[in-house]
Image (cartoon, rainbow, N blue to C red; front, side, top):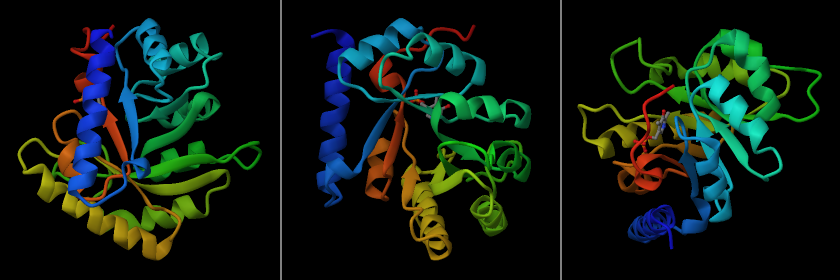
Length: 225
Ligand SMILES: *Cc1c(COP(=O)(O)O)cnc(C)c1O
């Protein structure tokens, strides 16, 4: 098997092991491969290996790859900071947007005329730095209301990135608590998008349903273009 295939299989085995450790069924966990900065050819290789869910964090790059690979039945997850003026375009190729954190982006993504509803997740900021993406967990409820009344959007859950300076398990425990609060407002919003290459085991132990894994599977990222 290719090095890529080996890393994919190894990561999936570790995901399954962490799920067992947590007393969970691995089938309830979606592994999204983050392919940012990598060429479309790598995404195609991943698709050949059976990958269906891929993620990107920059609109122009995501749009170009999604167009080039449109014949592959891939689900594109948008996980980066989103500008309101690009939001409408993201709807065209994305199956889900994980990074809703502002009213202006909610309003820009909302579309009463859309044929399909777009799955969205609310991004939490687990740091004290307002410059990082996400809403403070305390301020979550107001944004939830906004999303629930926005046409063409379906709120699926929460997303977060663990801060570098904190034990990831503790950070993800806060995400789990926020998810419980969210489900009181919207019982169907059960998704928890958490866990990257370095901390997906801890995320699984705290209930993550969607992992966003880049380098552990793709190898080192090329420099951004
Ligand atoms: C790049 C990125 C990831 C994947 O990071 P790795 O450390 O390579 O696994 C996950 N989530 C977001 C939001 C990202 O931008």
